[in-house]
Length: 315
Length: 286
Image (cartoon, rainbow over the protein chains, first blue to last red):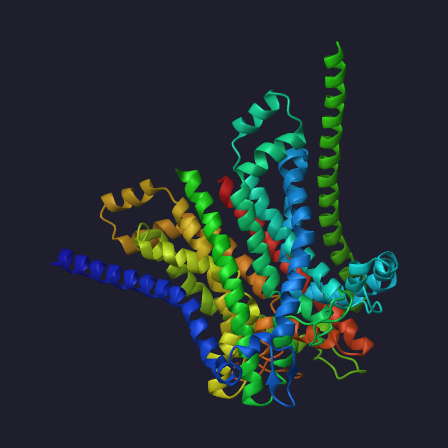
């Protein structure tokens, strides 16, 4: 009797706990879908009003309620592209140093220091970028760039105009610092998957360190590296606060990297609470939806590539 | 002999290019470490002088007068705690399902994929999401909405670590429990959780470190509040949002407060992540 009751209680509590975990799992699963649905709902008025013109219009005018996303999309892509151009070689360099030539006792502390860089909140990079990096660039680097490229046909356009300090270039540099630890961490992890015997074989036939890295390590980890770069790119595209501080928030497309611009996330962060009128708010949510779609595609691609590496390691 | 001389030249060249490439890698590492040092040193240089008892005892001031950051610090603590309280149980349960009940199911694969995407989803989009589901229907900004958006950032981090840590628990423990007739739910709570505990706590600490500096999702959920408030149904100040407002203002005394706040946040975040790593490392060696 006692035994039966206890067993029944066990079975009941077992079932309750199991269902509880299942519900939580489904909740996590539906979160992404819920985000998508709510953004589409919020963005619907703007989608109806502007249609596909939203993607190709540069003007962003709250007074006449004409909104187009071309300038923020352009700014987002350009800043992220330049950031990756800077962060990928440096991140790979750090990862190669950490896995191949760094003295053993220093590997952990240096690796941890780079990871700490990833832990520093976005807003800290923003305030640092605005008060330290921007004035520094304005007085030293930007005048030098203007002087250097001012007379070369195509490049002079990239570095035209006065050195404001804040602008697309500064935002890109801050972004580069912020994605650097992500690129480093993933590259280091995939470099460590290279079997030691492969590397030793290469050293055995007389390869130099760099030849081992270039001809063995990198080809062996190519897919994982691409995944890591895409992961970093996903971060860069969605990064908000740091960019908001230093990009200058100008809704126009300018060839010059020294000119102020804007990105999708910076536009939302700057204007959302001040947006009056449903169409204005809805347009900002539509911008958010675009950002969501762009980053989701890239992150899903990155995860898929990294997941394939994992599968490959298991088999 | 000719060919040998040629080879020696070639060997020197290869060694030189190798040294050059590895030297560049060292330079890259120095650049990375230099960035970290530059940010930290600036924070200490600009923020340390503003640290005083008043920072922790007075409210955020209007420009030009004395004050502190008490309401912002309190708001950050309240919303962080609420965010963790809402997010962690859901995340631990979901991670438990993935590692225990649904270990071999397709559903778990899908959830893991979605969760990994959530892990690096832009936080501003999460702010927009919470705005449309909470702030817009309720017609006002609230600390609760801020806490919910922080919870959504906590969830993927903790789901990930919970699943990973539970999977590290040896199956022999589970089988031993089953063989003496312990029900599965009790086995999970008394044995699997106990074995995975330090790892799961590490995950929660890392999640706290991540949300304590988050600004973007709070901008249009919790908004800001110049005064002391403990009402979770009303706008509430938070350290990151106050830093954002003060740093972009033209007043030099507000900017000084922003630097001090930035120093406080960074120290908290770094202390949390170092502590979490130390805990995680201890758990791993045991």
